[in-house]
Length: 66
Image 1 (cartoon, rainbow, N blue to C red):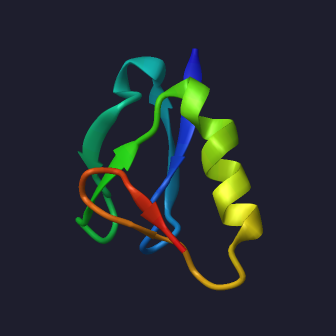
Image 2: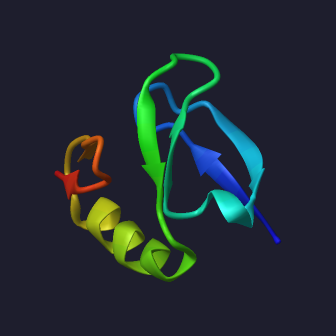
Image 3: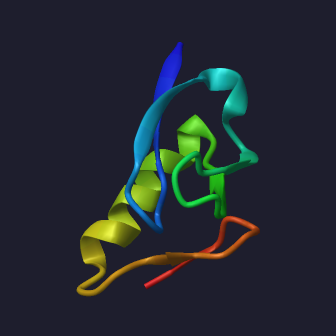
């Protein structure tokens, strides 16, 4: 299975194999590090983003703030 990763900083996106889930990766465009969530965490992350009225910050450990 493949997943689409999107950098939370520059919004650049690309396709990754699912073995990248739950790992920190470096964005190919802005070079910042972010965590790709596990597939079962994606609905929870989408809820946080949907409820946020401003931008969402994801720290290096993958915790989301917004």
